[in-house]
Image (cartoon, rainbow, N blue to C red; front, side, top):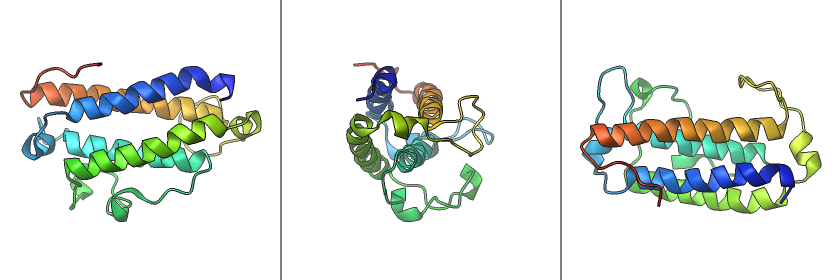
Length: 161
């Protein structure tokens, strides 16, 4: 693994586990509950993270299928979502894309990481490495939301182990 990726890979592994910990013991009704009309549900946030991981895989050169059979490809908000995946689907897709990314992290070269990025993320480092760092921070941000939604749904706090 390229040395620049080592600390990011540790965050990737931690977030991979934490998403599953956030969903542990959660029932479908709890996952779809929204604390207000202006907030997302845990299921929506988790499905969004699966899509984000799939995008990361594509950025890293993997040909990954669209998660959930493309059901959420055109949605940008929970209000646009008519067919939210089940928790089992979310977990399965998360594990699949994460497994593919684990292997890809080990293969990326300095040239891969230095490739320019022309997308719209609010980052100063406009390389693949910069986008990898941003997307892993994005995972962390939404995992924090999942931890809060978990507590608000009446479940115990997310655990790190």
